Length: 215
Image 1 (cartoon, rainbow, N blue to C red):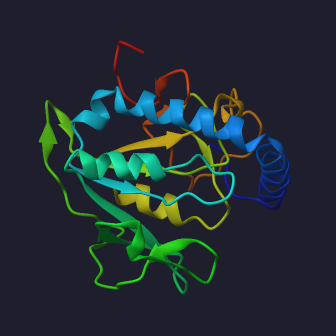
Image 2 (tube, rainbow, N blue to C red):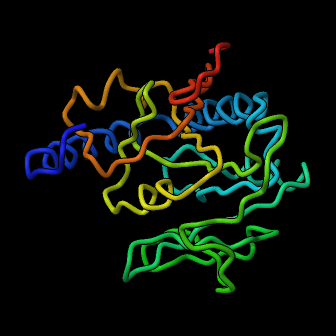
């Protein structure tokens, strides 16, 4: 993958702006329908069925919604952990919650756990395995993904730091319009960028780094 450079960072910044404009411009009702199908795609897969602990971002604005996913996790007796991004280090700390009422709007305008009894810090608890699949599932945000699992995030690097030490299964949520052919060929992949293992869209789950033969 290309190393970090001013040209790569500039290309990332430009692509982020274009993707946000496109995402924001889509009809909210159409987004909601698509996001419901993305959630159902995830629910139908064994990576969800085997998960015992779900590490999930809390969606805002025009991001792929995670509200129904978090609610389904609780209904299925899964444990849910959501992140805070520590301001000084830009690292994620994870906190277990049992209700969205336990969240507050943080300094960056992102819902975060109000109680600061930290569950994990870049090295979350290992939930073991189920049917040969790790039972810890991380649901990862992104502005764009590609079939190789590469993702374009928001620029802080919080999730790259987290994924670098995460031993569970990672899945990015993307509408098909956010799935690009190759972020590497677009020149927006750096050496510190960590791909996800799967990408779930409203149509399919792509096994980006696994050897699953059914996809």
